[in-house]
Image (tube, rainbow, N blue to C red):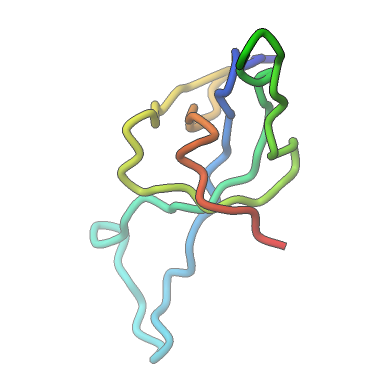
Length: 95
């Protein structure tokens, strides 16, 4: 398996609903990349003032992340597509 370094988080994108609230089906060509994801793995955190600060998110968390995050990298591991992103580009955890 893959272990991110420092404050990086490995996410699996979760597909968004393909219908609008009014029932209109959105074709695949018009869909945006989803901004929800499931945390697969996390780094150990960043070092600040000589001490390691652990990340807030944990594997299994469902999160929202910035669509145009500067740190987002699409990666393929063992045939599966993931997003590698800094924790600072995660907007929140869905509960």
